[in-house]
Length: 269
Image (cartoon, rainbow, N blue to C red):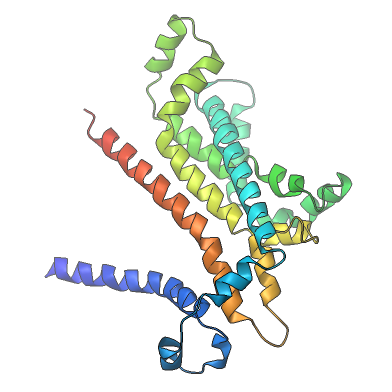
């Protein structure tokens, strides 16, 4: 009975989570869905891919897509490297100010990013980085969440491995890139998913730092389908559906690696 109840609850949760995506896809396959007033009309009316064709071939959509890809990929790669390097130092090295630095990282975790919006904007103005990729990438190449995540995971790695490598003459760079980094694959997968999704879906700072369509990202570009008097639901949902494809692909790829890594680790004695 408990198993049946649990399965029923999980199925209900699945429906709740999948329905928004189903609704998005449904509206994207309808021409002028805003003119349909009932759910039955939406279900039974003609399906078409015209919204996808018009959205993808629009003047700036491909540019928005490329910008989001460049920014999210660059920030993710930088986080994987720099957060892991910082976490490695905090987890294994003893130096003056280490505890203060660690407390600072933990303190930054509770500060909303919106708090730094104005000072960060002023910095971008001073550096003349508005309407550039630099303003969309540089502020996020290291995050406190990534540093804390890497530190906690590296602390669980037996340090005897590092000591054995040092006895063989290995230096810090060799140990980090050839020993520590490969052992951090599970946490790198988690950090990659978290960072990529956050930056792919980021709206506030790209909207604040760019007012030129040449550097705008997808979330900013999709707002152009929101008018003052009406909303172009068909093209908006088509654009949102296209923008969701990379997220789903990245998540499925890295999810498999996470499960394999955790499973292999759990089987070790």
